[in-house]
Length: 85
Image (cartoon, rainbow, N blue to C red; front, side, top):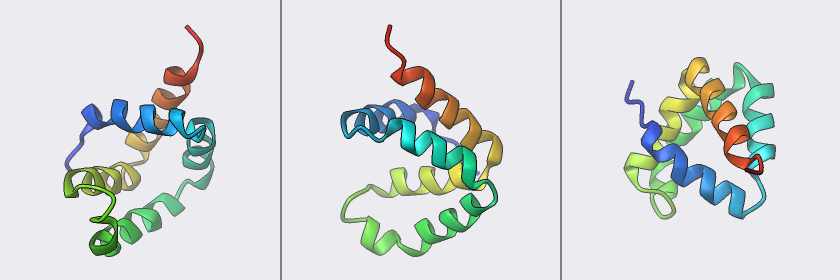
């Protein structure tokens, strides 16, 4: 498994800009075992996703979805990142 938490800041910034940060955090927390299916879809969709995401980003996303601890950690990161300072 190739953990890339250094990408989390980039993802969190983009999600915050689009107003999707809290929604994504909630989905990550509530979908549980379905995240593994999401990871497989990311792997299968890499030819299409390659037009929007680098291979590093798509692999990191799939890795995150495969690992429940990393998924929870990213969800927590999103929630902390979006709280007003």
